[in-house]
Amino acid sequence: MNHIGPGMRSHGSGTDLGPALGQSLDRIARVPHLLVGLDFDGTLAPFRVDPSASRATPEAAAAVRRLVQLPDTVVALVSGRALDSLAEVAEAPEGTVLVGSHGLETRLGDGTTVPIELDDTQRAALVELDQRLSTLAAGAPGAWVECKPSSVSLHTRAMEDAALAESLEKRARAAAEDLSIVGDRATGAPRVDVLGGKRVVELAVLRGDKGRALSRLRAQVRADAVFYAGDDTTDERAFRSLVPGDVGVHVGDGPTAAAHSVPGIEAVPTVLERLAGARERTRPTSP
Image 1: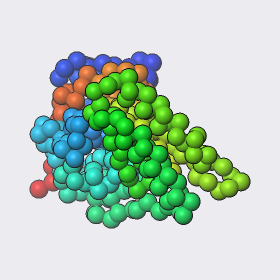
Image 2: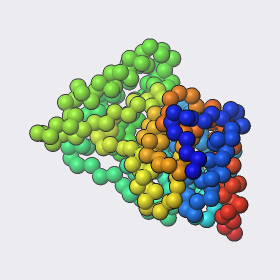
Image 3: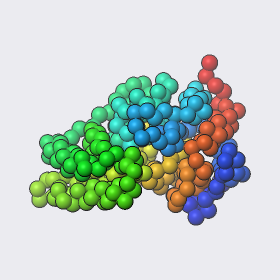
């Protein structure tokens, strides 16, 4: 088994995947049942100041369609977006599994949806978090707040003042402590999970974890191996959930638990096409 640990990460350059990643893709393509997990923003789709304008690149969308058509192959888009938002921008082919809110919301390939359920205390906490972050954003041009079913996010990507953006992000992280609703067993108050991303801070009253979501999905579809690609800090939980025989690909620079890296989003279609092509040789395309 050609398993590369985080300390032996392979690096592709441009559309040249490098021998280690290419060999790993060819190997995992031969397993009987394969789960392909993909982050959306920053992996299939370039970041946009307006998240509703995000779409997968034509090349990435074509590669995803090719994989979805293969038998014994489940493709899942795993995103921090709320499920409805992910469904709108992904425009995924029929049969694609959609996982939103960092694993808390799931729409299976047959359209069955697993919703988020909050208790009264969690709903009240969500309202208060929204108020706190909205107050922060009100005095900062370019900052805005997004409400999801179990979390509230402060976005600073559109802010021109980088120092102010960093200050707002720190204050947003501190909001969980300020609210005194962090895992207090005596009062039953919910724990607030702080998720950092690229120019976004998300405060959640339920703990979303892409790694746990990927592990659950692996069991549900009875996958023999998992391929996962992502670019953000929240994708590291998914990479750490992988086991020997799986393949993780980090998109972009920076430290990662993934065994392989590619320089940017432009390389992702090449990775997916290589995987699809290798799998087609052992799993003929459905008619």
